[in-house]
Length: 217
Length: 287
Image (cartoon, rainbow over all chains, first blue to last red; front, side, top):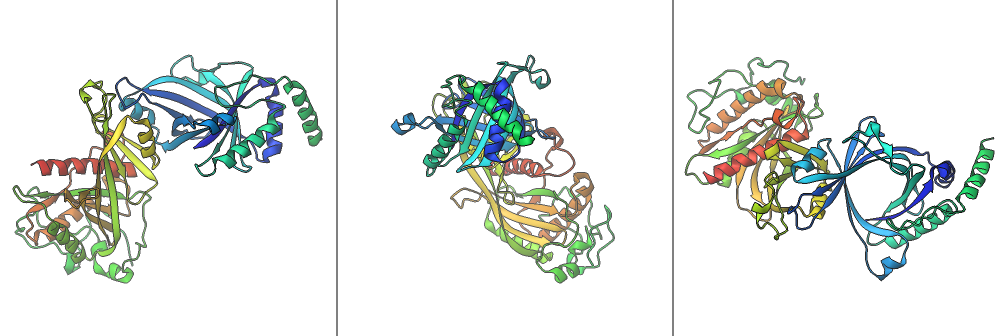
């Protein structure tokens, strides 16, 4: 299970966001370069149509593969009221033949994307992962070196934190309060409910950069 | 002191306990024996002196990161029903060779079948022909955090985390149908480890087969360890032959190259061997 929120930010303000995240987390940023392949089951296979994501981490010297299944969002009146999505997630590391494996058992490639950017991983009432990435599409199958941005000038910000059935309320609270720190730069909401860019972002970024610059002097 | 076997065909061993039994071979020995009675044994590891000095402690010699392992299954004579006496005799055989029992082991194999929109397991003929009718999951006793999935028709073995079985549950495209456990005792025998066990469906005691693993600690290379494995197997068969059991252990080579696996042994090799062994056990039961 995980709690997740997403938002978008103009690329020109990403540096300010990085300064802010660095200050809030106190950890160095990590490079993100992930080739994500979304596969769907062929017709008739499975009790229901299914979808699986294969993530190839290209930021490491040796690429590593992860199988990721994103489950349904938590439902109910309580879930409607909160601005954070709580959903089930199952992940497993896998050997590098995992794509061939899924093709072999009856899955087909639906789409693929290359996410490039950075991430901060830290503990703050929950185990946070904040990623700031641009989505890139490939002109040819698997041609990650030739990837071009899908939305130039806009980057996706995603905050996730693992949760369990007995503690997700605490995790939701921790994520909600963390989002408030970022509010001047971007608005975060449930995935799929994007509320666009924040009008105050320019001023907030300028302020952050000036104070951030002063620190380095 | 202890030294691992330096050559493919080592010098004769002085130990009378493990000396090759005299010919003619007793009934039950493998008919496909290649070497005939010999006066050589695989390695000084089988001699009691290093064993007696170390008892059941872990081997104090070079241990490869991925020691070579070989699986054998019990092939009963035609018309003979499988029973647990074979298992006891094989364990007794390991002890008579100087093996020290040091615990239990267990490996699980899970059969998955495709699910269809028509209902669980129903109307598989509606599936596209390239969808496999069966997947095997293998959970090895010594690596509980790992899970292997084997696509036999495509000669593919996937290594994943234990969470992989949860991914499969969530996808609802293949359903776990049968869970077979391979379990038994483990014996330390110098540079070798023997695991002798039975194959039983989960939550039952119905005997489906008997098998054994032989692990040779010093080597990872399949090619380099081939001769020593063959020698060990010969001695094993000769010792077991004295018991006149109604059948024999057989090793069926897995084609690792077809699975894209190298000469350097890995857990994936073991998973593939379990798949081969299972196929043989099922064929023996059908016969």
